[in-house]
Image (cartoon, rainbow, N blue to C red):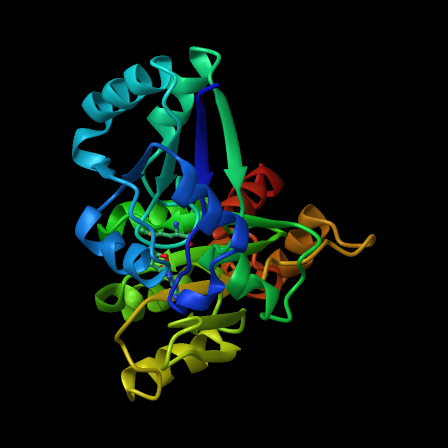
Length: 274
Ligand code: SAM
């Protein structure tokens, strides 16, 4: 029986490999790797000599077809990415979808993911959280996504590259208010592993002063706005503020108090005026 295994690998510390992952990688016919040269180190470390095939973002459609053809010939394949769980901000979606469409068994071999590792030590609410992956790199598009998350009550988890971490934290300060709590988890499980926690204002300043090194890999974990208290009512809040302030200023203050988007309050203000 052919099986496609989706195998998690370490995100830094090679010892975070499961016994089952090693055994599956040793026993499948092929390992489909995002970057075969990168994965070679892991395979050598665990004395795994299974042949590797390349599977990466730029050839996902073609290589997915090739791998599904092998699975249909009863070969078993393990999909791995450069680090962590494949498909989580990593290639593999097409392959899993296409294999499932052909009724091929797709089996997870779970292990690390940087998002869950960071979240688990954040001290922020984990009852509900959302994974936002990488934000768009362009300023306007990124701000637009952040605005849509403005009233998010769940803890938010982001991935970020070192050359964009300062820009992103600054943009978050604008979108969510400077007081929102954030954890910046850097180089999890590696030699320079650090966890920094504070407000977005403090984070921006720590990055500007290089108190947080802008090198390596980052997970950013951001507090949600929390559940609204029972008595909280957006329209009532705006009515009170409008007694003293013009609509634009009232919307700004309401946003600072609640974290809900300024636009939402501005629209309420216009309705109240009418
Ligand atoms: N599939 C991976 C997973 O399950 O976590 C994520 C792959 S994604 C291409 C790479 C991003 O994950 C990095 O840019 C960083 O944001 C995050 N990441 C991966 N390893 C990390 C680590 N050791 N410490 C902090 N962040 C990490």
